[in-house]
Amino acid sequence: MIIAISGVPGTGKSSSAKELSKLIKVPVVENKNLNVSYEYDKARKCKILDPKDVARFLSSKFDLKHQDVIFSSTLSHLLPKSMVKMCFVLRCSPDVLTRRLKRRRYSKSKINENVEAELIDLILVEALKKGHKVHEIDTTNKSPKEVALEMKRVLEGKKKPTYGKINFLKRFVEK
Image 1 (tube, rainbow, N blue to C red):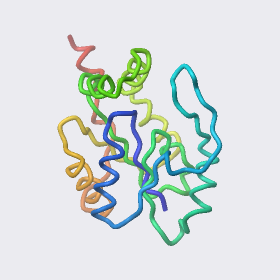
Image 2 (cartoon, rainbow, N blue to C red):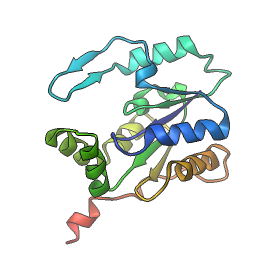
Image 3 (cartoon, helix red, strand yellow):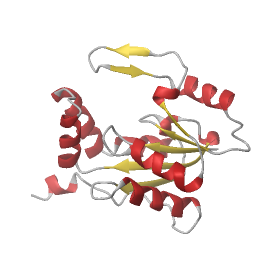
Image 4 (tube, rainbow, N blue to C red):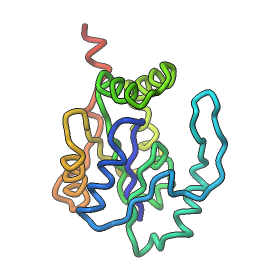
């Protein structure tokens, strides 16, 4: 089955996935490892992948009935429920997220788009619509290792999956 790690860019998916992989001895797949066709969005300067193509690719490369795989991607939460063991949605406060994306030299519009998605819980809502078992983690003040340890506890059943407690928008509304 797939252990999905999702979130907007800059929330720590890749680094946390690598740490989790070390802890539970499960391979990590990221978008760059996928051999699937894609469209290129010139305005956003990014590849647009079809989750159905990704699901077919992962199914062809791994025996998902007998092997777990970590899939770290902004679209991992869009995979079919039947393929996903657990969906971790990584979150980050908008101010820290903005700084991280600026360091990556994202355009102002791309930063705004991702911060808005974070503020409105877009990834969480989409994951829940897919019917996934979801656990949200605020990575703002956590190291990738701390995030991975939390994911491991959830996977082992030592921590109950929770979501809906992270609300970055509340700070702006209560002022």
